Image (cartoon, rainbow, N blue to C red; front, side, top):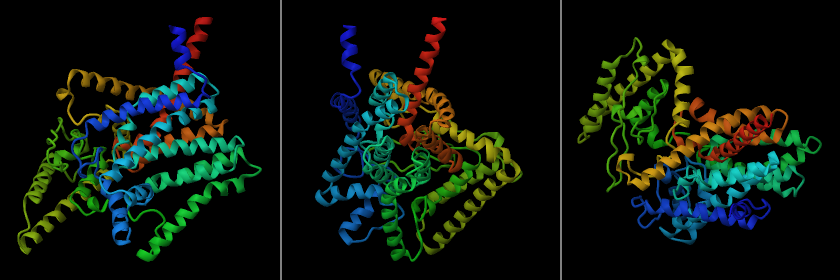
Length: 491
C-alpha cells in the first residue's frame, strides 16, 4: 500500500498531465468551497466577492465601453485589460463570473510551474514535491481567486514570469524573455509597487548572460516599454502631465475623506489603519467600514491605544476629545450651507490635530517613529491567522468542522511564515553565489520591506503575490532540517 501511494503521489516531475490534474482538483475544491460562502456582494448574480478596490478596477473599463473614456483613471489598467474582453463579450454578471473562473484556472495552472522553479533552482525532487503539495492545498493566496481584485492574477503571473525567465536563461527560446516581460508588465500594471522588479530581473539576466546581456535585456523590456509608452501618452493627452505610473497610490475616496488624517496618525506609531479589521487601532476612533445590506456589523476586538505613544502635544484625554470630534463630524448632516461650513471647520480641526500628533511622535520619539513602528507593522503584516477571509464569522460562531478547518489552515499559514523566514535567510546567503535565486529571495524581501516598513501598510493581502515564493523557502528549510537530522543520525 505504501509503495502504491508513493508511486502515485510522487511521480516523475516531468509527468505534467498528472501534476496539472492534481492542482486543478485541489484548487478546484478550494475554489468551490470559497464560492459556497459568498452570499453578498455589489453585483447581483455574481458568484464571487467584491472588495473596496473593485470599482477602481472595473468601473473605468465599463465607462470605456459605454462612453469611450477610461475614467476614473487613478488605477493603472493592468486588471482592466484582463477584464475588458469579458466585459465586451458578456454582460454582468456573466462577464465577472467568467473572469473569476479564468483567475481560478491561472491559479491552478501556476502550482506546477512553481514546483518546477524549485526543482530547477535546487535540483531536488523532495523540494519539488514539498513545494507542489504545500501550494496545492494552501488557501491563503487562493482566497482571492473568486474576488474582483488584483491579488489572484498578480500571484499567478509573477510565478509564470519567473518560470519563463528561468527557461530563457537555460538557453531555451528567446521568446521566453518576451513572455516573462509581458507577464511582469501585467503584474506592474496591476500592482505598480512592483516596478523595481524590472531592475531585479535585469540584474539576474546580466549575471547569467553577460556576453549577450543587452539584446536579451531588450527582449525582456520591450513589452514594458511599449505598454508604458502607450500609458504615458494617454495620460499626457488626458492630463497634460507626465504620469508614468499612477496619479496617486491612495484611492481618491480615502484621500479626500476623514479617514486619511487618522491613517497618518495611526501609522506614525505602528497601529493598524485597516478599518474593516475588528482588531485595528483606527477603529478606536470610530473609523469603521460600511457593511453591505444583510451583513452583520463587525464587533471590535479589545482595541486599545498603547500608552507609550504620548508626547508633549497629546495624551489619552486629547485622543478621547479627538474621538468625540469625529463622532460629531460623522453624526452631523449638512442640511444648510451653515451646517456644511461648520462640518468643514470641524474636519479642519481633526486633520490638523492628527497631523500635529503624528509630527510630534516623529520629532519627540524618533525611535518609535522610525524603528519600532515599522517593526510593529511588519509583525501585523506577517503574523496573523492567515484565514481572515476564509470565513466571514468569528471563531466562536463557526461549526466544529469549520473551526477545525480554520485551525488547520491557520497553523499551515504560520508554519509557512515561520519556516519560510528561516529559509529566506538561508537562501539570501546562497543568492550571493547563485544569482537566479535572487528572483525568489529578492522579490520576497522587497515585498516585505516595501509594504509594512516603507509604506506602513499592514494589510495581509499585500503579502499574497510572494506567498508562493515563501513556500519554496519552506521546502528548502524542511530539506535542510532533514539533511542535518540524517547526518546527525549517521554519525
